[in-house]
Image (cartoon, rainbow, N blue to C red):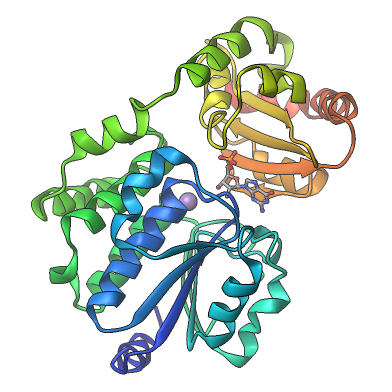
Amino acid sequence: MQNLSELKEFLLTPLPVVIIPHQKPDADALGSCVGLAGVLTQLGHQVRVVSPSDYPEFLDWMTSETEVHIYQNKPVECQKLIDEAKLLVLLDFSETNRIKPIAFEKLNIEQKTSLLLDHHIGKTIEATFEHWTVKAAATAELVYELIDMLGLKHLITKNIAESLYAGMMTDTGSFKHPSTNSKVHRIVAELIDLGMDSSKVHRLIYDNNSIDRMRLLGFALAERMVVLPESQTAYFTLSQQDLKRFNFRNGDSEGLVNYGLSIKGISVAAIFIEYSDEIRISFRSVGNFSVADLARKYFKGGGHKNASGGHSSESLNDTVQKFLDLLKAYQPEILANIAD
Ligand code: 5GP
Ligand code: MN
């Protein structure tokens, strides 16, 4: 970070701070918010997390010491908090369209001091202070680094350490993605030394499923997965009816797409979910084939080379058909990638 000393100085005076993660925050987005909020609160700031939309129930444990407001549920109150904030912190996103239902202009970012930490491709937002690199495995890693650079590691409590760990664990696919370098392991080692219980976090995140969610997983694998060996691709579709049948809750489809990639010989996986207002898509790949480009060019989305997402306002069938047409065009690229 270039102007670190300026940020240090700025943080000396207690201020109202609002921290914003991306819409439908995952463990990295929310864990980063909780981690930074915990440290800034101890410095005397009045810190609120304003999440654009709700977060999955299995992340509830993180937020016991953090004031989290959901913009979607209380837009007027949340807007007031944003307007009154003297510092806006944007975590785990850097594109203006990632905080729906908040309109980015409503942040009035040019008139405020802002801090942005993110690791996604395609940054379009400019903040006063930035720590942005696509090389980071998780935004939680960048939050840890910032806390370290500010000389505030001693303020990392057990809950903060566990929230940051949850972000790093999930964004690295439990430390298996290529982004899992030695720095990631070093930070995790430090977090363990600070008292966090990695095994407990694992169980809280991965062994906390509802029966409905497990049944949805079984159903999706048996009935809603299509495998196209000729394109080294597997994809899932879930209709509104499917979701209703399994009492779908936010977060229930988290990680489902990865089962596609776990099939031998498959290097691209996708899932198309029919929500009431739009189709949400997740893409995953292994190797050099960039699903971030695919999501950005054709599905109003973005993300990382190997993990991206997007959405579509067309029907479920039309969206899948568009994907299948694209697959034909990209087939040589996908197959070449694996040959490497
Ligand atoms: P997921 O499939 O887990 O929802 O998202 C995978 C990655 O793609 C995440 O890093 C997420 O931030 C990014 N992503 C998901 N949906 C969108 C989207 O609509 N727009 C952009 N720019 N990125 C997305
Ligand atoms: Mn992330």
